[in-house]
View 1: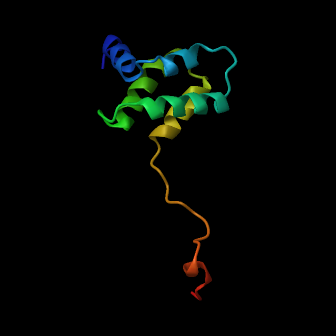
View 2: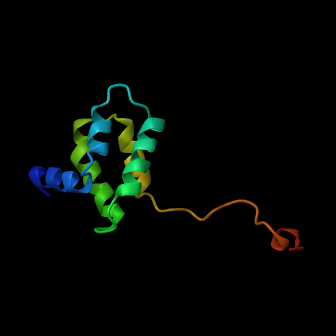
Length: 97
């Protein structure tokens, strides 16, 4: 993917510029990046798949800011979801194994 097409794709996947602007904020931390990512996610289009959109955003922005906390947030967004852990509620929790 060429740099121009990567930037165009990232721009089309981030029409409000939330991710782009997060990379421009001086001294931003990971909690703020997670909040911005969630805001972007709530407004993201369903097509193409979110994984493709996130990968394009990461490809477009990460090389210019390799230590930026948004990189870790975007990479976490690409990680497969794990099954919920913890206690099951209701009668199943009280049943003998």
